[in-house]
Amino acid sequence: MAARLRLSLAAAAALSLLSPTARADSFAEAKEAYEARDYQGAVKLFDKAAQAGDPKAQYALAVMFEHGRGVQQDYAKAVEWYLKAATQGSAPAQTNLGYLYVTGQGVSRSDKQALEWFTKAVENPAHDAWDEALAWGNLGNMYFWGHGVAKDHAKAAECWKRAAEKGSPYAANNLAYLQEHGLGVSRDLAESTRWYRKAAERGYPFAEHNLGVMYESGHGVMRDYAEAVRWYRKGAARGNPWAQYKLGRIYERGLGVDKDLVEAYRWYLSAAKRDHALGQEDLKRLGTVLTPAQVEEAQRRAAGDKP
Image (cartoon, rainbow, N blue to C red; front, side, top):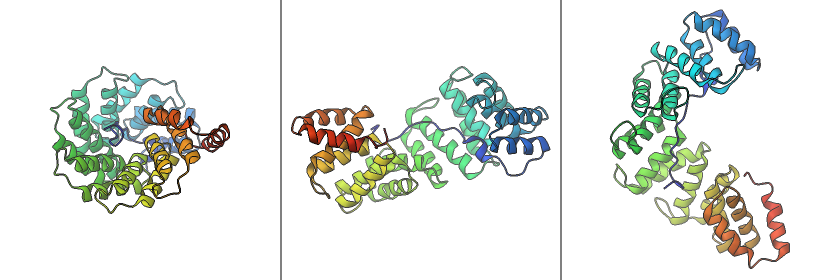
């Protein structure tokens, strides 16, 4: 499952999501300082606006403490400021607060509290599309795993669909996986392929791999090895070990490409460097039939691959 489904929580993307206008001059100045990479100056100005009660500044200050930008990293301080912003209705602060409750950073780990904050974020009328997508995606994870709530794949699918419709490639990939395997929803390979494509076209490496699988197997789409190779290449270029492994297998078998054992070894090697078990096994197997010169050539090609 892990090869096809990517289940990881996401936090709001911090200052890139801040409003271009600010109610307080100190906040506007802080944003300018941040964009100029004057993080220490930004912290002082965010603190001034945050102390005055500006929820955007409170959220931004929490981000600075969480990531240690311009100040020593302090998760407890991050929680303190996220909480202040969240109680004032900041959707990204609510999402990030839920994330910290799940991970137990700066606060005692609590799936129940995380679920409550993710729920507040999706119900928040002040959120923008991306805030909402992140919160729905995280909420889907909680239902899929049964963290803080009864496990419910149908509810997970519903949450991920809401996130996918708001532009989350992560959620689109996970929704596609549920549709491909009929988990919580009716099995629908065509619809699954559609969502994999949406995620892949946004550059999500797991979806690029998964779309390649659909083309290679002919599930939900006509079998097309050339298309499979194209999408595997995209995922491999972003460092996805499964896509790298699949490229190795494609070249070893000559599916949609000329058979090339050196190129196969190259991609098995790249996957193996990412601790891909099958890649490591096939690397050893193929290494027994290649000459030292061929292995050296494959290693040279793999040197430029993303680890």
